Length: 182
Image (cartoon, rainbow, N blue to C red; front, side, top):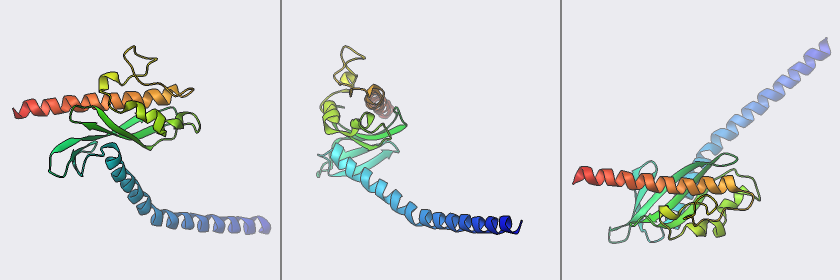
């Protein structure tokens, strides 16, 4: 009986020490992780809208890009789509004509070697210069111009549909604001 109590005390102490260690580690790393995400997103803004000199938030999912003269060069939209293995978060830069200037995947948990290929330049380059009307997988729509990644249709479809949806919603929002103001 004494042996069981002795082992229980040791295990309890180990658990308490491990719990405290994890709490301390979490406390000191949480801020760094958040700052790293912010830096990654800020770098992504310039990557997806390269002709912009500075950015101004419109709301939580969109920013205006301005050139050095203060003229609007385009917009950056934040996308959240559900892929095969979870949420995909991306930035898409569009010009004033709503054509895609760039796409950057910020976070994804898709299957390595398959769905995770959505971050590759070859896949993302397909979106450049296209309006939302052309942002469909070729296999889903006769007017589509995007090739799905082999064996990763769900991931390909998620990001493709997410990009098209966010651009169309943004266009509608700008039209409503424009009509309201004029």
